[in-house]
Length: 384
Image (cartoon, rainbow, N blue to C red):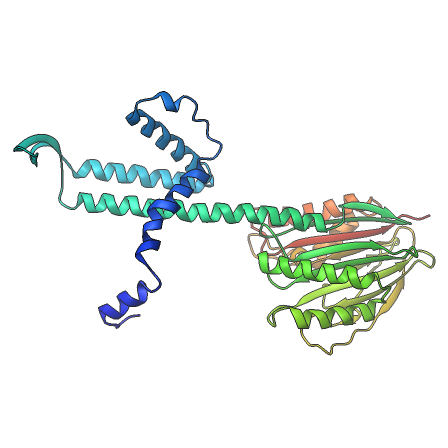
């Protein structure tokens, strides 16, 4: 902290550091970094080389293995740093000078490279910073692999992109802002022929949101099997989220129960962006009835509403990542953009509508990175 005595600062800065842990940086951690980052390299023929050429060969392989794991812009930046360091070293070089060296028998002057004072310290610092850089890249590389596996698991938990059940033609797709995300959708067929559709959005992004998403999805599928109606189902989910999720997290959810015998959709909207129901004649309705988001209050109650579905009607569930996607000027895609995308693709299959919405959002955002997860679930009544 500013103003602290030097000894206090040193104790704070080195707290938790032991000599053994520091030594492991150069033994275990450095060796592990080389092993992981050089995995898969073709080192054929290296064993037959002289020791000095073997070291050069292995160093070159490791350099390429390490730098190729960086993104191209960062790889270029690292290359510029290395070239700059090499140029600086050449400028500090003062030629060859006779330098006294001590042997067991005599002091013998040898012609050795001469450098400006302090060059050795600069070189040591440069090498240590690069070692730290390699170790940090290794940690991120390992974390990225773990997240890719988590993404595969998360994707496997969701229904297949396109499916048909009864008269419904359904397509769902999601694009997390990070490797994993907190958006989800689900389509569940009950034994009596009814169909449950749901779409939710966990507050936040990344790994914490994805874990809570998996928890809610598991609870949803468990309670649905008991034949619970949408309002009671949402209340029970809210109770469980309040009990088991961190207090700073909440989940918005739309859940609907479609009965093919009557073509009636009974639904609850718990704080989710209102799905758009586009009728065959072009009218658009918003399904808003329900209550507040899950996880905010334990005693929250929810009310259900119902609407009919007819041939040609298209119900579009979406997360706020769709409407809040911004272009380079900061203009959001907004609900108007979603309505235009639906109007353009009126009469098409659910898969074409879903793909068209995602394409329209990406075209709007262009070079801007999506700030939130993007999820769309299109339910089209295809007729009987």
